Image (cartoon, rainbow over all chains, first blue to last red):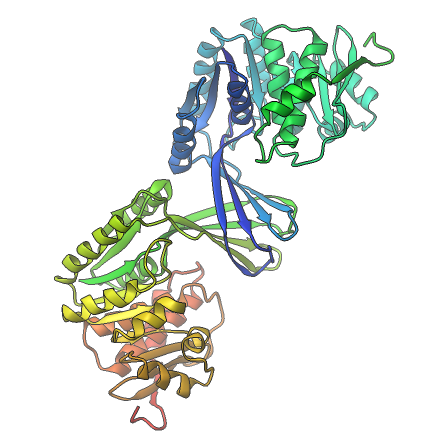
Length: 309
Length: 309
């Protein structure tokens, strides 16, 4: 069993409109909704790969009800979300059918009370007892202390559970010091943490701050720096398509590899293949299984120069 | 008891964003939600004025649940919405805090099955037995036949209940022939129905098509053409503010006057004062009671030339 934590779950809405014009009135031609938040997306990919996965975090209100109702229909996925008084946020992607571009509007999320946060911490410790790896994903809803992930990383390490952290800003900065097994910042998040856009320098700095390994996904593939070595993993060709969810799929690949204690090159190959198969899928955030199998067989994982990281 | 019909109820969401930029990602700074759809808005104004009012139409899904939960807290308002399998639509107003402008995105609404539509017609006939007036308001959700309002107008007339119709397009065109007591098209809706933007010509044409009276609200006030005469009602000064909901407030004024069988000039004064008090209210769609009382005392209602309409 793998555990993913999504403190700020979401009901992800997508509206299609013929053309988005500020200050005009629009008839939405198509509405789709699905459960979201990074950890929920990661869990969906893991379940599709055949892993048993438990989803925890908070859910509340009518939107939370819709999230839970949709999760209830997913095989191999256990809903361990905690009910809260506030309502789960919505995220809205408005797709302009003329240009194909997307405009994103994200609600901040419900206000979590101190009692709700304490209840979550207790439930989380109980869940850690039965899992092979945990991922802590996404933004913090209002009311959750900025050092929240640092505490959750410490609990996972105390329980002997490998922990992957995928967040940004101050919550990332605080939690890195608690020594997560792996962080997965993109180039912007890594620069925000370390002040550097130079991959080698930024990655080394992130490890000096406490992260035991760093994997950063960019357009060319994945650069990973770990205690065992340093690698660059890339798909056979540059993939074109919709990058929505590619990062979450990469987390799913890394996390399943962490849970199975695979060698690093195998973890990275899985992450890159899943990420590419997500970009190639016709539906945003889904992954194409045939593309995954095909890319996985052809991913290149090469040691980086100066591999004594 | 007054009845309002809202076949396409809505959960009206308002997002405030610092500045709306197409194709960018936005953090929503404030989210508000309230029950909506024209007939629901009309009912809210009537209830605030002290009338007992019943709301009917369709509600479904998590959004429908949110609509009904909010209505349950309103005094003098009876929820007689019919549950349906589909989900009540959302409407989203995105307010740009920098410019103050609003971008509107409206979902189409749930697909209503033939059985659901039949169940509504039966419930509506039962409700008509106990009411002094009925308003049929807004767009039709998918699945409801385009001639729906024509049938509902006929039922009301057969039951001896005065009926006000506030819709547009083909549903308006079809229902006008069923002889509603009053229609309230704006200039665009009237032009769409009659092909003319010339108020006198358009109004006469609308009456010739079947409407027993026509009241059209514009920036200068209300022009009404009825069998008893023709009037123009105007506030004491041009009102500036947020026009959201002003038309629904005017319907509430006309409908309460219809229910009480007030003389036409009194109905029109009430409608204009409520409309102005809505434009002047700090919250979009609400009305300012003090402004209502003040404007009501100072509305001018003058017979229009050629008053043998």
